[in-house]
Length: 222
Image (cartoon, rainbow, N blue to C red):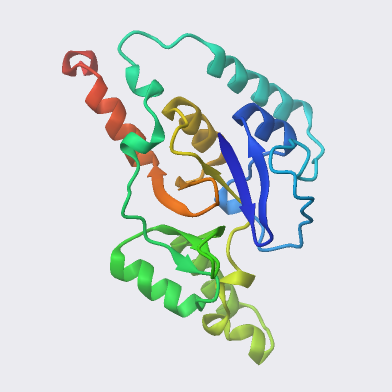
């Protein structure tokens, strides 16, 4: 099961196929900063996010990914059926939406993380922040001619510059579908959330690769 969370709460919950039908999942580099998004309270409705125009290329990509998801699992790839909860990092580092950009930068650098989920005061997922994103904000604020308030990016809260809405996954989801979403979106990983939207873990590309290596006989690597 996959979900999408934004500043107003859970915006979508459903299967990976439904998520692709609702809207393309943007990569980190193409993600927008926070924007007002309405919420109708229907947790499982696939139309709870605004639909985006999809060209023929996007349609073909979704069809190919859907076909891959339906294909039988090859022998020697049992890792694809393992649930996210078995391989995710449980000691997940999170930031608060009220934290400043400066504090977020220092904390990510201190803990040597390239990204972190962002939660609100109730501990519910609202977005994600990456070092690459923060570096881009710092660079643009120094190079562009702006007002004094706009140049003070270091003192702005993550609520106005985090990546949001952001997709998430349940611990019961299988790794094959998560791998497909990461490949499609170019995200570094996905927050793992419970029924209430609280972050319980984080599954990264490295976690999936490690699971694949553990499941594959060494002689298959030549």
